Length: 211
Image (cartoon, rainbow, N blue to C red; front, side):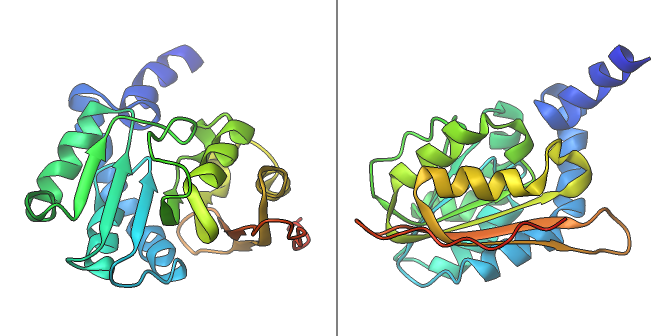
């Protein structure tokens, strides 16, 4: 039964592909919309900034980020799923034509972005697929000093203690790490992490992990 469930769930949500991937993308666009709005708002995106959206899925967060940075900004989306990249391209067609949005195959561990080239990184409901320490290390590499990281994930899919995310972020060179669990009525709590890329020679200061 478990293997059968995984054969259904993985192509819809884990590694979206084919018909199930497109169906999963539509469900993600609805189910993750509130977290996408939270992430973009928490990133405090400004016109002209350069933003990376990791595991962008059907592109809801990409569109929100593109609206926030405007015509002078740039939003790079990386996702390993060709199905998700196609759905995001359709959603952000105008932004792609204008060059505000760019889509690539990639992951948190391999973004393809130059070192210290980004102001903000956003991740919504995909950290459970990362090699966590490698992912945080790569995001620290591509952010400029004092750049912002915003991450949120459903607690029920995280598969680890939330405090492990804080620890991995600090080990990768992030400071001012905040970590919280936000209760929700119709879903499990949202695990929410924000952090800053530490400046050279700065110490790390983290919050206590939620229980």
